[in-house]
Image (cartoon, rainbow, N blue to C red; front, side):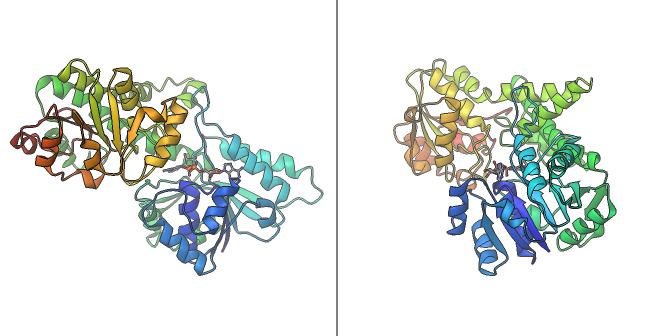
Length: 443
Ligand code: NAD
């Protein structure tokens, strides 16, 4: 099948590469010409394990191409046009649909052959109607109308495991109010959903809500565990044992139950905000999610709070920070807890020396957006280098390379002999053996 994917970021690029991998002919579009130039040279602008080799293989096979010109692509027949552009939070917390609707207007202006328009971006209930109205308004100004249907196909991939999630999905959700459009989507996804039960067809609005419900549920689990962890700290209870104790209950399950420094990334924070906003617009207070969000905002400050409890004044302390990315497996720094932690440390008069295996470049851009002067954070090229001259160590991202440190070497390097484990990666006993006190979250 012939497919256009508009927006070549984390979702668009993975979608395009995976659809091409199973034999579809795909063009990935982006308005960022420098991104498209790099992609044409085989350079992947984001860190996502396995993506570079998949893209290169697809391009070599002649099934994946990159372009800035959506109009030109729409001069030829296409089965589906995916909209996979960003939907960042607006000032009031609502999802900013300006990029989505700009693409819809372009489709309305340029579509020459019947096609299915697929909302892949995370968008509030009712957006497919707005996309349809936008396409139609522009198309009405043209002499020749073209048939199209708008469907919702939210994406559930996780950064860091995006290829596996897309190639072997737990489910593919498609909201369609038209049988022909649904048939196109079913054919398109057939290579990924061998078990028919994995292809979940529903109404458009139900599919739009399903995406928000999934992210809101996962964010709720994290905030719930973080709140319990704060209580465990007061009571001398180990949250990690509690986590194991409840995760073996099949009604609860094991995923997204780790206490830590709070959730971040490009999805949970903005999607929780957007759902709260949708609720308020419709007279439903969304009190659970408001609490989830408030708790998460607090949690991002918790690690530095624990440093202050343990050490008193942080002024003049040199803090080695292991990890900047909002989670392991990605270079995404959007809403990363490390940004709050760094800002808190600098405000407390500490100095920060940071190492992340892949996110140091994106971190510089994120510092800029957050008003953190890049010169105020020393970046080094290894976890060992971060320890040189450090007073304490704070572990902020759960990268595998941090999980089994050389305990004795860390102990020898740290002046204050303290490790603050923001991801509950370690056992205190391992640190105690080398004379280091470990402070975790809820332990
Ligand atoms: P992103 O910022 O990485 O990529 C978006 C891309 O769209 C950018 O490259 C941008 O230049 C491009 N773009 C914007 N307007 C355009 C236009 N008019 N024409 C062509 N290109 C345009 O965003 P992302 O992380 O890929 O997220 C995209 C959507 O998918 C969002 O709605 C997000 O909530 C959702 N989503 C993201 C994830 C994730 O893990 N990142 C997972 C599931 C769903």
